[in-house]
Image (cartoon, rainbow, N blue to C red; front, side, top):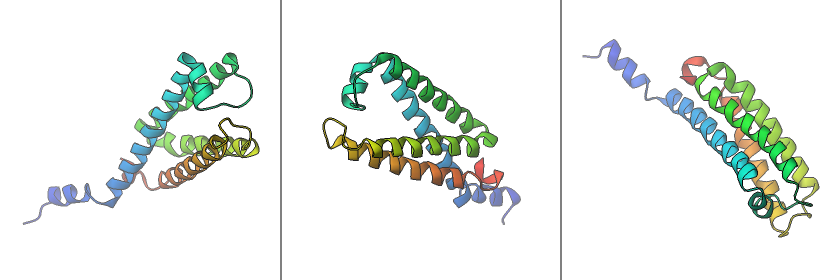
Length: 147
């Protein structure tokens, strides 16, 4: 005999819940990325410059400035994990930032040292932009899917 509780339990394991889980996992994954990048920029700026962003001349002040943006995105994505109403706007904003960042790397694609890092950075930023855009689109589904 099936009860309302059984129907509720089976509904909680369906595609809608998996989708909500995917959006929430994406939020936490990108928040962790932003926290890690911000920490690296603040606490190990030379490592960040030589291993991740070897463009131009190292400027620790600008690295710390950029770290504040990453930290703000990390906090915003963490809040969006808990607050459904924040998800779409924050994901759209972060996707836009990644798209603009990718364009900037495309403009400087030949300036990285080692040379392979330029195309790699552009490709990884473009893929992250696509992932964020997908997460933003998925976050627009009905609220019961987001819980």
